[in-house]
Amino acid sequence: MTTSPPFRFKPRTYLHFDLPVSRDSAERLACDPGKVSQHSFYPFLGYTTVIKKISRNEDGQIVKKEKLREIKIAAHRDAAIYSHYADLLSPAYEAELEARGLTKVVTAFRSLPTGGTNIDFAGQVFRYIDTHRPCVALAFDLEKFFDTLDHEFLKEQWIKLLEVSRLPADHFAVFRSLTRFSWVNRNEAFEKLGISPNNPKANNRRRICHPADFREEIRKNGLLRPNPNPGKGIPQGSPISALLSNLYMLDFDQTVNDGVTTMGGYYRRYCDDIIVVVPPDQQQNAEQLVLAAVATSKVRTNTDKTDRVSFPAGEGQQAIQPASSSDFSGHVQYLGFTYDGTRTLIRPGSLARYYGKMRAGVSLAKQTQRKHNKREAAKGLEQSLLKTRKLYLQYSYLLNRRTRLPGRDRKSQGNFLTYAYRAATKLDAPEIKQQVRNHWKKLQEEIHR
Image (cartoon, rainbow, N blue to C red):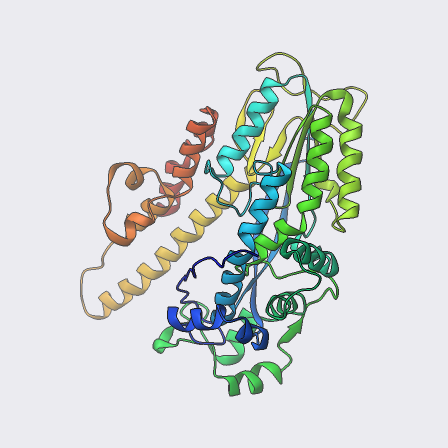
């Protein structure tokens, strides 16, 4: 490695098994290889996010599925180490991308020179399709990506990046903490320790528990869980996991990009979302190339989520499904958007999540207001009305577009509607605005229900 980058400190205030750490304390620990090599890492704190997926089956019926994503949060001192070692590895990884001609290929978890968001990356793919018709777009999804990363393979990639024969003691300590990790379910820990999940920082609580309580209440009661996949998997959510996932896929990216480029095609990867666009006569070769690279990298694809979309010649022509094949779908899905050759839309699942959050947000506001009204009634005061300002801020265009809010509220001005309008503009897709045209009506219905 070359010279060490300056230490970057990100204050973290969430509850964990240790106390929040100051910048000086974090720097003294993370920047001292000797201390890192001897550091005792805490278990991760885990929770599950539920992502609703909505699609249509072959009969045109709506199918709803739930995707569970396991998130693991590192303790404060551990997170400082992970963050710094990500900064240590990042310059070498970026140099490898440059040397291999992959700078534009890998778009997730990086600060690209040209900037960009998933809206921009999706737009680049869709524009490529339009300017290279006829073509076939192949979208692959890596199943349980972070859970399936092979430990030995990851270590080999780490060693090659550092250009050493074996990992230095401090790097190995970080590697070991991520591959032999243990974790505690956050909800179970809160319940065992009597911590309210709705207000965990009540009474100025700054940590989940003291070390003695951890041993007695967490460890002895069997709440400590090991990595469920020996030899595979790193926790999704640590400050270094994203970089390591890209490092893991470095050879995969080069193999697929070189092969697809030779076929006259286009390859991009955003974390576990892979898209390949090739001439129609190269479809089979491209699929075989990707699947072989997947096997070599010891990960696996989710075959149920593989899209094959054929785009005919002629600008603005809708995607077609060849009569000889039932494997082709009518649109390609990438980074939260669908494209059928004529229209770009936000995925139905994203809309469903937005409206679900809207309903939950209004319900919570009503519950809070009922509590206020009870207090007001007990004091003989006139009952106040439901507070709608934050609801409009979070779930409508109203305050977003017409009101400049001070302080903290200004940071919250971006919401799903902002995202949708921005996507409609960047992707030149007014149909996206049509997708959300009823949001105000639905919000008012929820408020007045």
